[in-house]
Image (cartoon, rainbow, N blue to C red; front, side, top):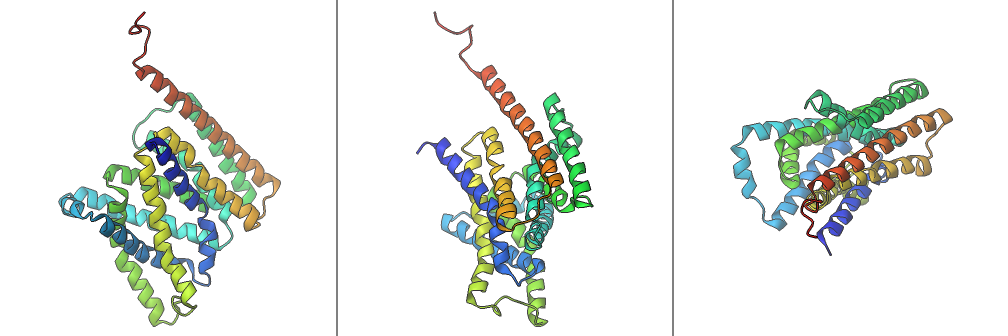
Length: 306
């Protein structure tokens, strides 16, 4: 199979798994969001260490220990992803799946704003239009919810900052996840032990099936991330940009069709504005990428042999 096709399949698999996460976390009830988060941290480390053991890939650790800046960035990334994971689990298990999908719909627009504010990038006119529509959508949904959509905004901003920090660290997916989960291991284990000693733990007390599902949280964290990494090195960034919409679309469908969350007309209007903003943003990205390929093409009028 050609690398490009394989990469697209890996990317589609990663985003499909992320999109179906809302079906997994409710299976872990009656565990609370913080207990699920603590187990996800601990079992993610076990899963990623197993992957590294199979690959016999340990040489990176010595080099990383000599780069305190990267270690500091990955520590910061660990804190940020903890916020993202915790809010997402809370959202799914409190029937806010649709709002959580909104966070990942607007994440590309948040990333663009980060580029302007933090990296001093300049937006193209259509990008400004998309950001404007995205802002309007948030205002409409604030009126609809009767409050700012804080779950969506927290997910969008935290994931955007997480991506920015990971880009600065420039460490592979399995390696960075290992460091991040190592950073999180101590507080996660401390909380798990506290729940056990206080008699509040559900791990083990709800049966073997529940315990296996809790441990499985580590597997479903590591596998899509590794699939995403395999995709990122094989397909263009523009293709990854299109594939990323698979996840929030599936999350939205899970919320509307499976969780049966309420969608009044005003909420449909807000989401429709978000989708319009993303359509404009995607069109501009594809057009710009196409223009860049044309400029780089060696077949120009000056070198065509007649």
